[in-house]
Image 1 (cartoon, one colour):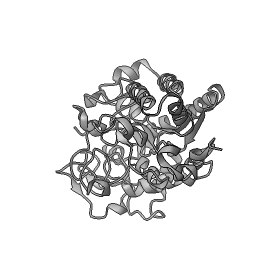
Image 2 (cartoon, rainbow, N blue to C red):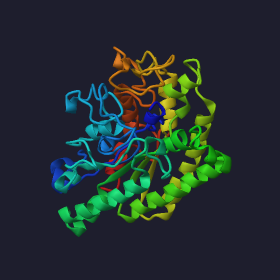
Image 3 (tube, rainbow, N blue to C red):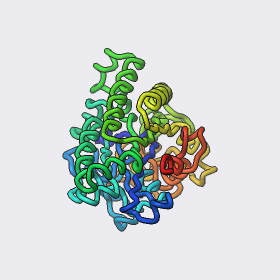
Image 4 (cartoon, rainbow, N blue to C red):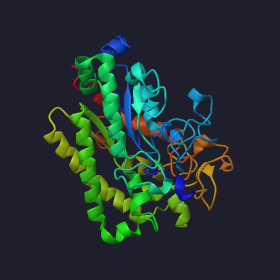
Length: 380
């Protein structure tokens, strides 16, 4: 179970979101470019809002004290892998979204509720279908895109063909936070992935990831998606789990995972530039999550934290980084002072900092435009 909760995370970052504005649905707010109508969110546990609650999987967060600071549930767990909100939740709030995007697997995700947003993310998910098999079950990116295809058909029925097409193409943002698990719970996973590592060099593995991701993003484009924000992989060698099992000092990170993340991120930039050029009318925004999160980890005191190495909720080792957060975990008293909520995921306080930088940051953080600009892009 210790490895089994390693639901990606780490990229620690993450962020994300998707915004969709529908003038008829949001009225004046959308007309003024201030309202966020719907969020189509894809990815892993960094943005999972409860899909894994509906799966037989080891990657779950629907137990206390997860969600202890999530006001919308009264502090009860919702399946989010943090003490409060994900970055996607916070971005939606900041952009005026009336409700959080519903998990796709929730029975309530139907009809007009889809116009507020849908979250397809799943703890343990990756770009590759084999990623996360240690958890027994998860919804990988291929299936998440399949799920959006079903949503797309339902929106067509709710709005009619013409309005639905405009709603998706002009007033939607697709936010994708994925890739960390492909390293943490696939390529770098002891024993289970040893065959992969013997047969594939890092370059070949990353080639495979980029090739699969290109197909997935192109499929979304073919389903009328036009505005995308894609998060890079964060410094996955710096999460409490990695620091604990490698017995590092608080200011140290594991070199190999971070090196692989940077190598992948470089290729991701190239992929998004290629898609921007080759897919007419598309806008692919690159969110530099790696540098963003590394800045918070390195300069945590400047941001008001007391630690960027110890998990608030967890057990095992110097950094409470072995056993995932659950009812038997030790729990810190100062949740606002921890960058990490559990061995793998950032706290609500850290997510708030990350989300605000993605919303209003410059092109060093999010390129070629930030999320507020992307929301209004092409709306005339």
